[in-house]
Length: 253
Ligand code: GDP
Image 1 (cartoon, rainbow, N blue to C red):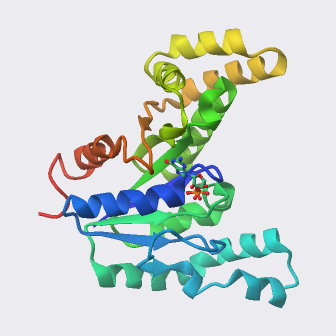
Image 2: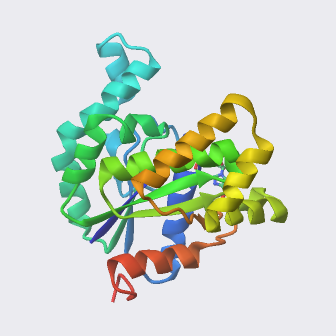
């Protein structure tokens, strides 16, 4: 079994990609299942095969511990660790070939709390990877693109798993905007040029400094342009997953 965590900033499209890519994988005759790991999700555009909300209810926690919505969500995310064996058992009951895991909407609750990496490690003994989403609409600004590179590097350092990067929601971009972002991922010089030309003051300094740190961390950036709406890029993402996990074969023989 291969298990992929979808990680990205709030609203970057994790839930939509989970729904759309899982359905698309089914059309490729892959045996795929979907896990919702977001205790705060209200409604989901997919039928989760395993859902953390069956074990943890944020509203009950808020009432029981007199917490507000943020406190309740933080506690709920930390509590996933207590039920990780149950979730593992539930996933293993399905024995899928690919398992897509939709992670909490606010990525810091999963990616940057100690419990997140531990949950990722203990959730089944499948071969795992992280799919990091760059929100394309947000990434039109070079500062936000660099910030996403920085966050993806931090996620990479924390999870120590193969990382697949996607540029989500490209159907919302003009062709020139998409070409510009793709250019930044292909050629560091073009990104440096955009930072120089389009940013000023503290934003420019911040971006330049972040780019230096990112270079030292040594993560490669080539996010695959995708759209959960049009399925653009799904074939490329599928190919990349196969290249890393199965040596280019289908997941389900
Ligand atoms: P999450 O918080 O990362 O799980 O993000 P969601 O999947 O909930 O998406 C946030 C918003 O972006 C929703 O309104 C989605 O309908 C929208 N969205 C997500 N992916 C796409 C996409 O590929 N194309 C378009 N047009 N909208 C998208």
